[in-house]
Figure 1 (cartoon, one colour):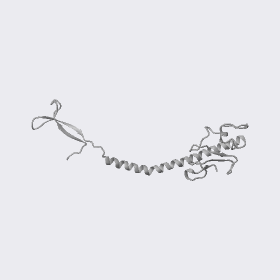
Figure 2 (cartoon, helix red, strand yellow):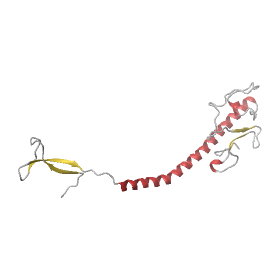
Figure 3 (tube, one colour):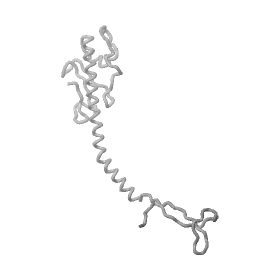
Figure 4 (cartoon, helix red, strand yellow):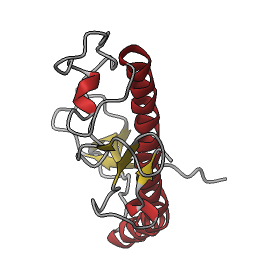
Length: 170
């Protein structure tokens, strides 16, 4: 039975016979046995096939992954609006009314003039921008409730759908 291996054995003539001669040929010369690795690499065709498969997988998975990024930005904006809304309610409990549109959301961080009952800051960090880098919109009195707090979404324009939808507190 023949054993298959990644190496081939080759007989070569040694320079000095004192070097582990292992055989003598029919004409009296000494030979020694050495091993030569014959490990083969991948062919160009095999590499191209693997790259094509990886490309197909990326084309299939990529859009699904990146659509989730847009959804997470909308959810993050909703969470930030909820947090700002709670801070505005706490402000109203302390001061007696919501900040005016002119005072804006910055009244949650620094005390506006003539508000002796201000007990802030009402946010633990700086005033956040929406996930698209624009400030949240605030109006008091609001048209939809006591106050309107919203972001125009990814496109920065009123209205929209999908990732461009307006995120509001109403």
